[in-house]
Image (cartoon, rainbow, N blue to C red; front, top):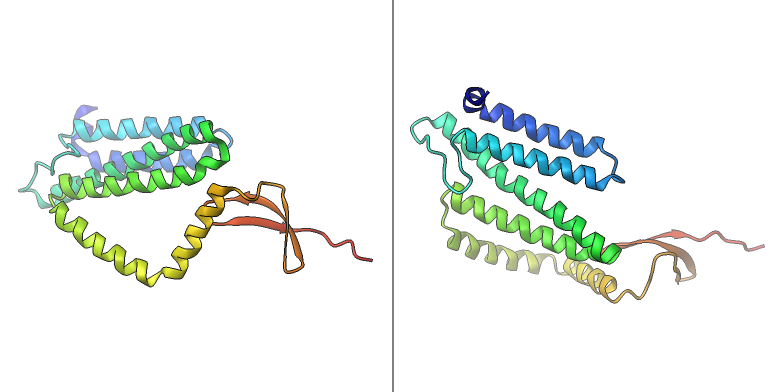
Length: 202
């Protein structure tokens, strides 16, 4: 078995990723603990495959002379960082929802975005050996450009954040806008979903 892992890490790693996706889809969302447990187990097995094959996510692949093998190993190490970010974000999301309920969704999304950003920077620095300082400076410039281009969208997003944090409306509240009534069925950090109320006019 170790020899098979050493010879076919890409095949086994890809199989574990597909298995993780299949289990995530197959297990009902109501069984959140089982879904997250399956993801954690798949991530641990994926990490074991990489380490047993002689790879480390904290270093570039050791096969610089073998271009094909080096490229595949680099891909696996980058996927490891993204897989780790996804696993950590769902585990923290479960903890946040358990502690703060529906209001923790905003914090969960922000924490998840930060985790993925850290994973991308770490993969660029450790696996691809890119100059992270230059990458961060470039991403800062791109953030400014995107912020100027998406002013109206960002305004709506921040309005949704304020709406979510101040909580002027709750689930099952009835609101009326321009003569149209609706019942609040869901509140997210960027939107509020309502359903129209039936009219009983004679």
